[in-house]
Amino acid sequence: MKFKSPPVNSLSLDFLTEFCISLEKLENDRACRGVILTSAVPKIFSSGLDITEMCGKSTEHYAEFWRAVQEMWLRLYSSNMVTVAAVNGSSPAGGCLIALTCDYRIMAENPKFSIGLNEAQLGIVAPFWFKDTFVNVVGHRVAERSLQLGSLHSAPEAHRIGLVDELVPEEKLKDRATAVMQQWLALPDHARQLTKTMMRKAVLDRLVAHREEDVQNFISFISKESIQKSLRMYMEMLKKKKS
Ligand SMILES: CC/C=C\C/C=C\C/C=C\CC/C=C/CC(=O)SCCNC(=O)CCNC(=O)[C@H](O)C(C)(C)COP(=O)(O)OP(=O)(O)OC[C@H]1O[C@@H](n2cnc3c(N)ncnc32)[C@H](O)[C@@H]1OP(=O)(O)O
Image (cartoon, rainbow, N blue to C red; front, side):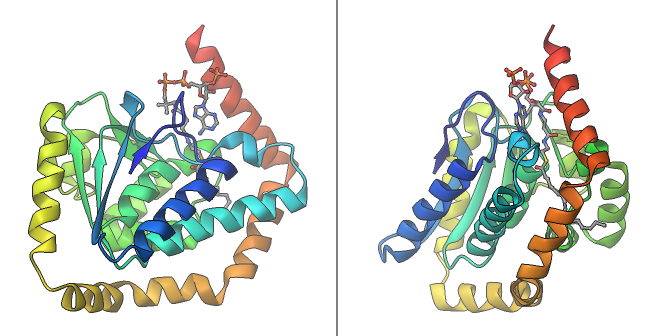
């Protein structure tokens, strides 16, 4: 599955809706046992959640948007398919979450590409299920430091801390992702799927049990004037960076 939402593959409500529909189609296709996620946009895997969806909108919109973010994560983290992220560009915040949610991550070894949960840098907080997914990949200590600092890690650093499983030259990313997929698909599906469920169930169940509470937390947090101001300033900073 190739993300193609220029300029930076931001995770808008439309993007998330289409992503879930595509994933569901593949999930229901008995001939499809695995999916490789990558980007058709040069140098960017995904810029994370679309900040404009979280700025100056109604409470109803925030609820709809957040439910779509939850849905994307629940579907991908619980997928029966083998999921491989071929990270061919930068991947902050929600983009990093997508990669973390897969079974295996391969990143292009370009030191200019960065990845991480940088929410703290925007003055916002990664929700508990972003944090849980991160902890399950890199461990508690690395996750705690990285989350508090809102670190964006260069590709070599991301590999060193275990955020990505391997680095390959950009031109070899597709072939390597295909080889990894074949390796994972060589196992019987039922054994792999049951093992995946066993490893992820507690974290999935936690969001399922607190889904509506999480939506309300998001709304009250994002609606605060101080948070709205931080997001506006961050967007302005992104725009100024260009000029
Ligand atoms: C106690 C707490 C209790 C409860 C908490 C409850 C809930 C939690 C609450 C909130 C959590 C919300 C979680 C959010 C997670 C996220 O994903 S936030 C998004 C974070 N993303 C980023 O920080 C990335 C920002 N972008 C960049 O760094 C760069 O754009 C990037 C490196 C991706 C690409 O750089 P470059 O190629 O130079 O492109 P530009 O910077 O020029 O960007 C091109 C245009 O795209 C616009 N843009 C970039 N990123 C976004 C984005 N994420 N959303 C919307 N728009 C984006 C950028 O402004 C440019 O627009 P322009 O062309 O100027 O119009």
